[in-house]
Image (cartoon, rainbow, N blue to C red):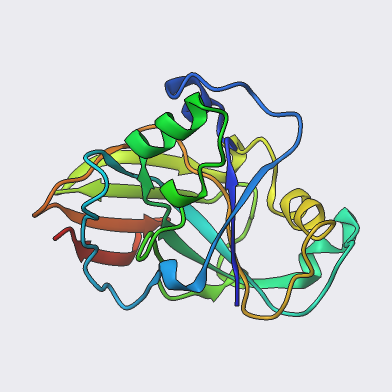
Length: 203
């Protein structure tokens, strides 16, 4: 199982971080050691003073494929969940300023909490799915798939050019605006279309 993530997929988030709008999906990976399940708490790492939450819809791959054409991409995922792409922003900014890879700021232990998955059939329109993140009962992030620069099928097709997708792989599809730092004691609750998908604490 591997975790693949898409960066800069919502225009407002690109603007808030003063990044350039990409012509193609921005892809990075997380190892399986980044995965957090079952609402396990997230422990702040000692190597960062500025860890940000980034809530994202997560696709689960249902069969193996590579070089998948966009029109067939929908056949390779059947379930969706919600996750957090935790980012050590101070470390990321330091590495980016030096022109170095910033994988360690995204892929560290526990940096990918993921909810349970539900069938895509639960949703009438995949291009109009709303999701939210509450921190201490305050709305911090709101997103909708209609705001994505690259939709699910485009992401699947693009990623499969470089990585063979296998059953059980997870793809984080990008975060909307509103990212900010988390602190010890914070409670994070994630929702898709008003239904709670995760609820965990920062320690």
